[in-house]
Length: 256
Image (cartoon, rainbow, N blue to C red; front, side, top):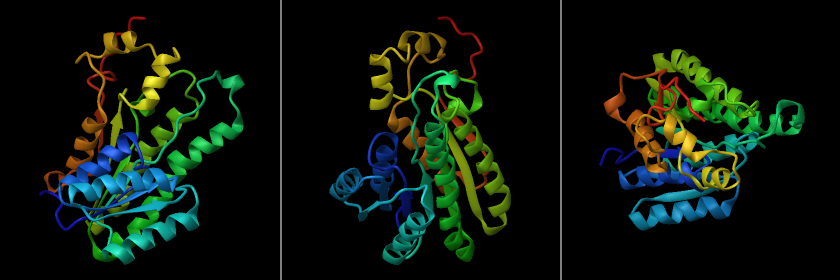
């Protein structure tokens, strides 16, 4: 198993992509700490990991709160003996409305969770990683951070900044043998995207017409890419952003 003996913290691991990532590490032998904003969802994933045979704990914490983040990381270190891998997956979307209709409070909340949360969790985990001169950090960004999607005036910039933060951290932490990379999913068949399709906010047919491989990604696709970047197979990759979108970003031709 690729991650036997490794201790992993996955934020936003209660459902969707985060849950797939946490369970993927569990299947590969890791000890897993599952964070979510609500204990019920974190514990659901942790229990599924235990059923696989992994040692797993659940932690409720708001990743935008520095005190809660520090407590979370301290608990992982205390119970597991260290934190070898951090996956910054916690993130939220935003109401899909034009700029002039957007509430500043929505902007603040998205930036707090998606960007500040990634920064705070990385900072807390890096303390242990620097001391032990080893570690892997994988940030879940988005293809939205590489493009200019309309009515995503908070979400897209938060992900673009996450990609840049990934490079900054990789440059700074490399001397401590810490790899920092990002995965940028395109459209992924999560419950959120399905809801957007049903509400008419995402045109599924138009997305698939633009996508060279003709399909959306699954949460498992993102989990596999994340585990690759956290593995020894990627030991000489740092500061990279791996786009997992079936070619959607690469294709400049778009038909409505």
